Image 1: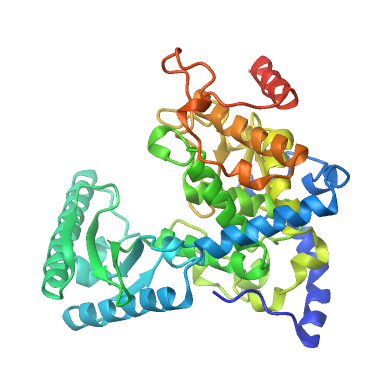
Image 2: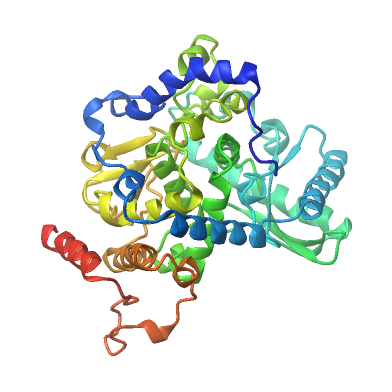
Length: 457
């Protein structure tokens, strides 16, 4: 939970040495593999940065007032040290109990529980790392992940057996949790990612809802990546918390309704801050040295490049030296960038590259099956996944209009509390039109911008 410390003299010298290549990394993009990752044509250029565009449109008093509200929101949402200590203690005790039954396993916090971005009372997400031989005791070594198997039928049987092994392990795990005093234990083996749901007393004054999954490796890498971004610059966490509250109150945060997930909005914040020079591209920094050392993160599960730079303590203070904007200006810049500057029809948000990629080069220009590709957000490690794939032509207008509404209010009045006001059905512009999506208000400037988008479609 600690914010970035001020750099020592030695660290400042290291920062000066690293600063130039980091700026280059921000311009060129980050890691990954294949032709698309190295192609210069894969980038979409936006010359103007949001904070520069807004520099003369807000007074210092307005920026300061917005900054104060951001910090107030942060203080209200961030868990206290005792709650975080309780979460860590729960994880540790559960791990000890599980290891007594299955030596060699390891329990890890992931998601918001482990990436430094959880809110008070939020669910506890846990991943149990189970060795292959323990999880699949009946499969011999030649059938392990990555083994060459040209017999399709045999391969399908193996996959079915693996699924049964996972279900069996989850059921046994559920029994262990019940016997250990966990509450409302429920194994859900039919989910896309099978889990065991349960509740546990946190030792303070409440119970925490927990989700425990098995070997969700990419989710754990994502958790560590986001955690490292939060440690690069103290401004990251307050901005993310404020955006999380905004999307929740304005009702544009539920993927099953066609909106973006909290995780996707977090990546949008990180991508924006990379473009502003506040954050570097961690998946590019130090890559040559990692390749020379054959870092195992370069090839995970025989498929994914999960490398990213981890020595973030050496980079403390770099963001403020590149862009010292106050929280208030950065927040308005976020809304301005995604409502006025971001070329949604042609660009892909990519934290991995620290830049915008081209939909054309990703093959995401047109809808494919359930992937609508209206707003495209690349998963940092599973780069073939568009995290914005469930957003459609109606819900994207809701998101765009909310971004525009936020800019309009902040530029006109600087009233962030009004921006964060809970959305209600009273705001529906045309309630008589069924299935028209959430109709939201915006200024003429924003409406014209949306109208231009519609004409371009």
